Image (tube, rainbow, N blue to C red; front, side, top):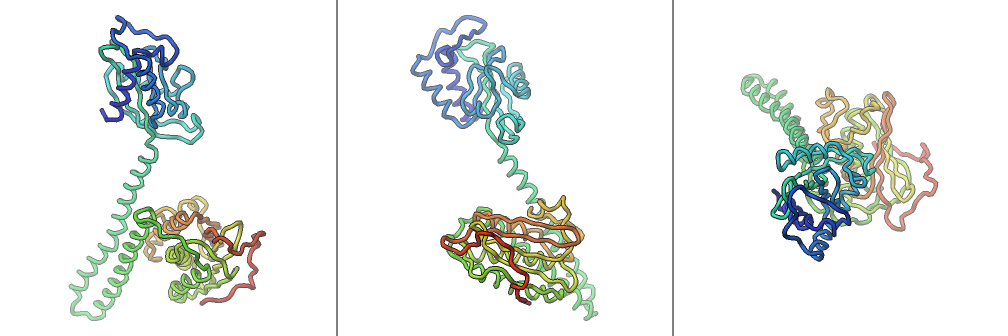
Length: 397
């Protein structure tokens, strides 16, 4: 029995003998009446402690009537009057009566408390002591483990995905090293294999760097102090980092929008986010197209929009593109050289700055990713939020 459950059981047992005082209702057990009882002050203290506890506590009588339910339990919506509303909890109560202590995960439907479905870790204990003869009531202690289980699932997926992503370049490097050894007498083959080793090494290094960046953004390190940052400088640096890759695909990057916007943030993180959006646009654009990046002020936020004329994103994938390692088309992963972490990093940068990132896309027409970051106090804003005219842009590459 965990210390928390032991404490709850101790409090409940102390109050069972004086349940009439605590609950203002009669109750009875089969068998002789208790010979010892906790006085009213102690019972009141026990009830007060239960009421202050964050875990939900429910005491169920032998006839399945509720003897006690603290505010946390009632807030979950599992109790109405003197009855439990969740069949799975009633089944657990029966199992505890027949077999002793039980643990189970019980999923509560979202319409009970109106806060969405929840997964509760439930510990059921049959109560009996010198003052409470068998068969006694059953205490249920419920703790919300929704986020814990979600985090565990994310961690498992993350480890599995990292292993898969690392295995690909590491395996390629091993094969290429073996190929070079076997082609020692063929300079052209050695040169070709060496070039591929360099590309795979670059991909592996980029994956490791992005994993480190993502770990920092997710709380591995404290967020640096937010300071005023010029949006123009962020965009200029991001365009400069992406220019070589864009030129290699005969793509032009057009910069436009409102000048002079200032946000509060960490410049290096914002540059990384915009660079990732531009790199994503370059990776999924083909032919002599143009990529546009523009900033404007709207409703207290600076909106940095990156637009491409690429392949677009299917509707079913649009909200998943910000997940770690998620790719719309797995077959393009190698050709684009992406790690599947770029947009996840953008999402966490936006969240850490109190902003957001959204996507509009149509297959065959392209995509627009919009990063929204709160403006710095006193920064210029556009109360109308009008789109930037096309002729206000300039070619950056």
